[in-house]
Length: 191
Image 1 (spheres, one colour):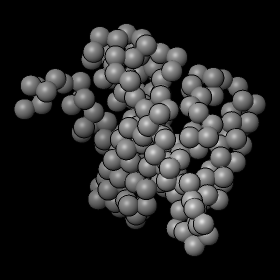
Image 2 (cartoon, rainbow, N blue to C red; image 1 turned 120 degrees about the vertical axis):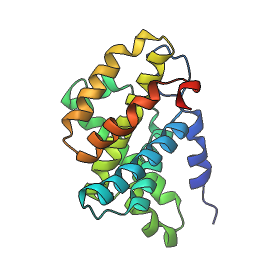
Image 3 (cartoon, helix red, strand yellow; image 1 turned 135 degrees about the vertical axis):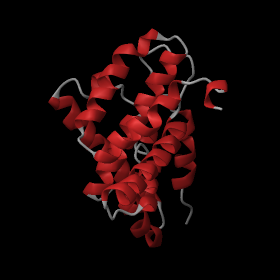
Image 4 (cartoon, rainbow, N blue to C red; image 1 turned 60 degrees about the horizontal axis):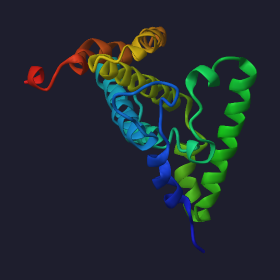
């Protein structure tokens, strides 16, 4: 039996993000997923080390790597459309769930149990951290676009920052306070 799972996963690089906005630097879903995984891992470590958490950073990172995998089959729907009204949001969540199950079904039966926790059956605490990392990645993109002089991202940056602060997650607040300012600096300023 041949499995197409990883061939599909590798196609994440062809799905562009931020389609409705002018970008100084294009971003694809594969790049975003990598950054989200790095950030999710960091948030899990911060939760455990600073705030007494007990979440598995590896599981959180893996869930973040696959958090947008359904977009291989659905495409990336722009946030303003996806979240514009509850009916669209609900229908899109259903479509994503179908796509996630379809991807999981592409794996050989003996591997599905290992991938289900990162594709279809994500633990609620893991999901919270992945969602925060996903939004943090979007905020970093906005900050980097603004740094490049692209005012198209000004409103998105403000909205995204408010959403992040509204999560009430101490690990997110810690990340914003400790690491976020560096994303506004040039390479020479990072020295």
